[in-house]
Image (cartoon, rainbow, N blue to C red):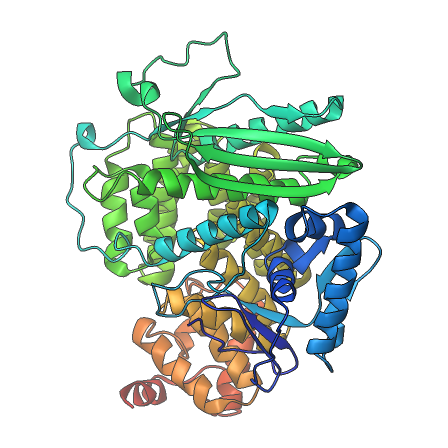
Length: 570
C-alpha cells in the first residue's frame, strides 16, 4: 500500500498506488461508490496540472456513446462525485471546456512495497480508457523498477577495457502516421518526430536509425546487427477531430508488432503547432525517458556496461556507486560517446563534492577539465551545456556564465528536463526563488517518467523551503527520501522546514542524520568559501533554524564544534 505520509492537513489526499483511496483532511476514507467517478478522479490526478478537457474525458470514459450522451454522462458523474465528497465538493472544479482538481494531494509513492501496481482496482473501461490505464501502469512500473533497481545498489564495478563496453542499441524512428487532411497535422507530426530523435541523440543512451532519411548512409560505423535487429520502432501518430489534435507516440517490436509503450495527449490545434509548448515538450520527454528505460532494461544484467548503466548508477547517490560509475565512464573516453561520458564524469565530480565532501579545489579542477574536453569535442551537446551551466553556478559561482550555458542547452533541446533543473538551481543560487520554483516545476513536469524524477523533485523542494511553503517542502522531501534516504540537500531543507514549523524534535532528528554525513553542518566551517552551499538564502535559513531549535545561542552565528559533537554522540 502506498504511503500517505506528509499529507497537507487542509487537503483531500488521493492515492492511486494499489487500490484507489481518497481520504479527507483528517485521514478518514471517503467512499466513491460510482466506478466511473473513481476513474474520473484518477484521470484528473494523473494529468498535467490535474486538468483534462471535457472532450478528452468523454473519449476515454464514454468513448462508445454519442457526443451529447457522453456529455450528459460526464455532467451526471461530476454531480454524483461532488455529492460523495461533500463538504469538500470544491475539490472538483469545471468550466465549459475543462475539469480539474483543486486542493487535492495526489500520492504516487509506493513506499517499500515493490509488488504494488497503479490503480489495481480500476473497473473495466472502453478502448480509450484501457489505453490510458495501460500507459499509466507502464509508466508507474518503469519508475518503480528504476527507483529500486539493483544496479544502483550493486557492489564495486569491475573495470573493463575500452573495447569491452557495450555500444547503445539502435532504435528505428518511423515515418509519422497522419489521419487528417489538415496540412498542419503533417507539420506537427514531423516536428514531434524530429524533437524525439534529437532528444535521443543528445542523451546518448541509444542510437537512432531514421526511416525518413532516404539519402544518408546511416549504417556507417555501426555493427552489422545493430539495425537488422532493432529492439523497437518508434512512431508518431496524429489525428484531428474538430479543433482538437490528438498526438500519440508508440514503441513496438518490429518483428511482432507488440506495443511495449504508448502515450497520447489531446490539445487544441493552434497550440499543437508549437512543439516547444509545455504540453508537447512533456509528451516528447516522457516518451524518450520511458522508451529508453524499456529498451535498456530488456538487455538484462548480463550485458556489458553501457553509458546508461554508468549514469543510472551515478544517480543512485551511494558513495561507492558514484565512484564506481566514474570507473565505468572512464572506459568510454576516446570513443564515439566521449563527450557525454566526459560531461557525466564532471557531474560525478560535483556529486562527490556535495555527497562525499571532497575538497572544493579538487572538484572544480576535475569537473572543469572534463567539461572543457566535452565541449571541445561537441560544442552543441545539450547535456554537456546543461552540466556546464550547473558547474559554473554550483562549483565556480559564476552564475551569469552558468545561465548562458543553460540557455544554449535549452535552445538545442527545449524539452530537456535536466537543463530546466539546472536553470532552477541557478535561479535559486541567485536568490531568485520565484523563477527557480517555476523552472523546477517545469523540470518535474518534463521529467515525469524519468527514473531521476526524485532529482527534479529535490529542486522543487528546496524552492518551496525558501518560499516558506514548509508543508509542501516536507511532503516533497519525504517522497524523495523514500527513494534516496541520504540525499544531503533534502535532509538540510527538511531540517529547516521542521524547525520553522516549531517541530523541534523532528528537526533535531534530521540534524543528527546530516551530521553523520556532513561533519561541517552546524559548525563555523559552514562560513568557509568552499562549503558546498551556494544559496545564501539557504545558509541564512539553516542558521536561523539552528537558533530556533536551540542548537546555537543568540550570540552565535554558527554552532560551536564541541556542542555539535555532543549532539552527534546522542
